[in-house]
Length: 64
Image (spheres, rainbow, N blue to C red):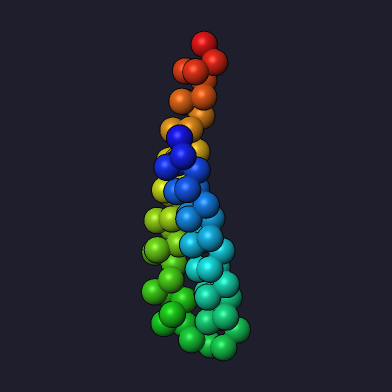
């Protein structure tokens, strides 16, 4: 469970950093960076949803 908590923290920090980088790129008209940053952001959000789903299933199994 500790690994999942650490992974969650890492994913949160990575998502925040990528959003800040994309916002900076849009503000300064570096659209190539925006298009390069969107796929990793989508991947991190997908991994975050999978992690949340797995933690929910683990907690439900432990409660029963």
